[in-house]
Image (cartoon, rainbow, N blue to C red):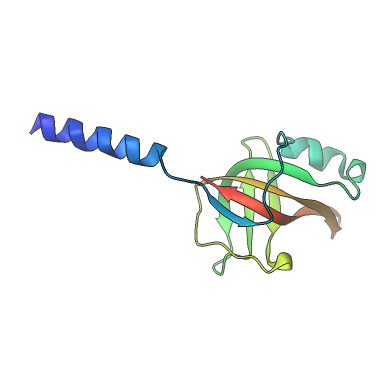
Length: 118
């Protein structure tokens, strides 16, 4: 019994570590993620600039066209529907998103152009 449990746990760990990331939209360029708080504190500093964020999906539209990402310190709304994208339900999963900041109703959000979910 113990041996079977150990084999099952080991196999589960290997399989989750070997899964390929899900990719949607434009391929991500090599870029270090910018902390969300940095983007929110100075949104006018990023006009016409593609930015990268990373964190966990904490809330998602039922049809997958938008979601909110938390990097543990701040939260950012991401709209991917503007580029005709949608993802399956992935709340709790890690995501890296590239896109452009847009202003709306006194705040900012990210129009995602490409993303990778792990």
